[in-house]
Image (cartoon, rainbow, N blue to C red; front, side):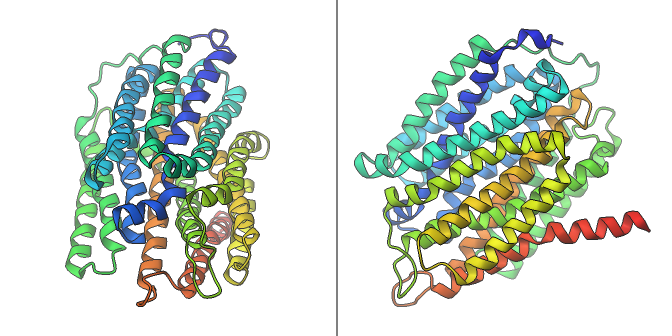
Length: 460
């Protein structure tokens, strides 16, 4: 294992710049969704699929990337993933149609696997205390990239074309990857006589793929009961098969004993709940800014939407860096509780207070602060709660959980808007937004319920 002294500020900085570029590439879809819906002639629910296509790939690839990084070295796997991301970004930048754009998003989705690979490098080259702070920094810069993408997506789309929203961040990804190759030392692979658990890889990937695709089916208003039932059966079948294989494997992809630890499964549960509520906010607010209804909405264009979402992106970047520090000082659970209280109160207030621009802007800031700090605290706590050889797979499970939560929330939010639109204009009604904010508030309160239940269980 490399000595911590081998890694200086330039190496961690290179990882951070790469995270910044990737966050920028990932975030350009959010403020431009209304524009893309107009350009491609799709509904809000279908528009949510444009962003979720990336998340689907990310959910499938991330645990595999984390395991491969643990086994063969984080830097080696990271560089290969960046080649795929770069190809996807360039393809999206040249896309002449929706199917090609979606294919580009599929390839870009492997960027989600870069986070656990970065955490492997940080954990291997830094002591535990500094690694928590460094993990928060890398996560913060990924979120800060979201700020950059949010800010420039509109001017690029309206001044040039929406293709440039994908092309320019991709160029930055390629440049920063070259810097990582040059500055970051190689981390040696873990010596193991056991073969990689490919049956476990295939079954877990299949479970996640069917589940993510099933989200689109189950949140579609026109979905049949048989289609929903088929998705449920497929997910259960794949998931059951994966558990059986992992229990019998000599060197499983995921050690189920590790997954059964309270620190791991509670982190996954809290992360899932928090990001589901956050995913709803991500789809609801841009639509509210864009719509121009009778007494609600603001009729904002893509550039204006980006500016309105910018404070929330800044708050998210700040919260990620704070989350790593808070995990080191207080532990993850107090941060999660505080975040749940803030998000719930914010959504309750937004149900009735959404007629002035500053109200949803402030709501996005508060929710981004609460969710970012909570999920990053859980991520940093998990990274240092497992053995170094399991850092990649443990953190990748949390990253996948974040992805699934955001995707689920976005699809639910899009389905709520699509289910209650004005038949005359085709625009979502005000009551649809109110329902969405109320549901997001209920979801945000669930961590408090979990904390109460687990405390009672511990006492008994």
